Amino acid sequence: MSGETRGAVEFRQVRKLFGGFTAIRSLDLVIAPGELVTLLGPSGCGKTTTLRMLAGLESPTSGKILIGGQDVTRLPANRRDVSMVFQSYALFPHMNVAENVAYGLESGGMKRAEARAAAEAGLELVGLGGLGARLPAEISGGQQQRVAVARALVLEPQVLLLDEPLSNLDARLRRRVRTEIRDLQQRLGFTAVYVTHDQEEALAVSDRIVVMREGEIAQVGTPRELYDAPASEFIADFIGEANVVDAEILSVSSGQAQVRLGAMVAELPARGLAAGPARVALRSNALRVGGAGEAGLEGKVATSAFLGDHVEYEIESALGRIFVIDDESDEPLAPGTAVSLALRPRGAALIP
Image (cartoon, rainbow, N blue to C red; front, side, top):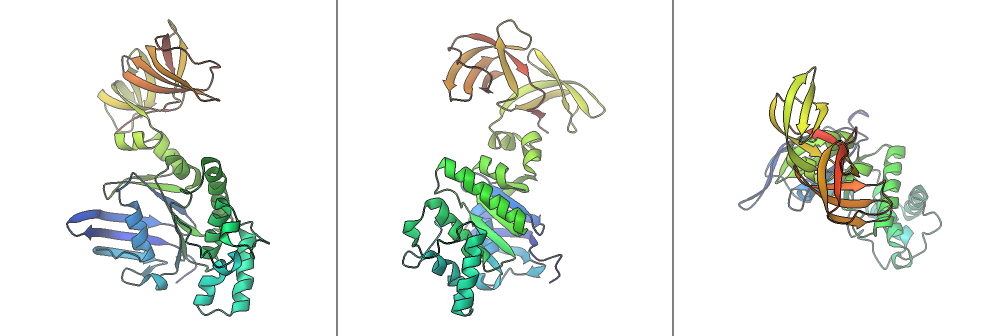
């Protein structure tokens, strides 16, 4: 294995059946060394099955899986040079933190003193130096999660696998720990495959996101690509909960389209479309709420909710009911209030 291929992952026409149920239809995916790729999708889309096949916990029905250029399709989990951080953390409650981190090293034949020294270095790496003597029950959920990461990293795997690693944490702690994981991954440069159903989490941590649907890849791209240029209505709705509305492309020139949205006309990247009926994804922050009679799309407030730093509206309009986030208003408008909606510079995209 060369230094250039260490940590590379490849799925080649991988298919997985459970009896008569097709969990993965035909998966082709390449993950570069040092890349953090997130498998994202609704429950039952195949993301966890994909991760488990990479870990060696499930065997593909057909196709090949390569790690570091080596075909590992039929290798058992303990010979794949990957480490997994489970949703439950899977820490041994009767062992202290240092013993938990050293466990895999000692099981692999490393002398106890060397394993404990490596464990302490691993704990320092994740910001838990000095806590090695504590039991898992004596530290917080976020610290337990970092112990699980340290235990995986001290094995120096080619690929770190993370299965819904933040799902047991509260919202504030999730934000902090996902930042810590991303910072650690970038600092050490290891390859990571991350599974989540949380769109915000995926956008925050990923180099690329693989959105899956019904056992297939719906779209692969950077967080910005998926958010700004969704390949389908499913992607537009799943990443950022866009409003998908009917529109009309009036003309196309030099890759830019003049698009009519009700009473508004906007210029958007044509994305290969020609003049005629079209569908547009409008992000919830793509529209500015103005007073009645102002230029834009006329509407009426259906519902409003004050959420501290912003107001959420549902606006009845000629395009249907539109969900809008307004971060400029101090007080929410009452249901029934007439408004106008103006398009902001970003947040609208034609759907191919």
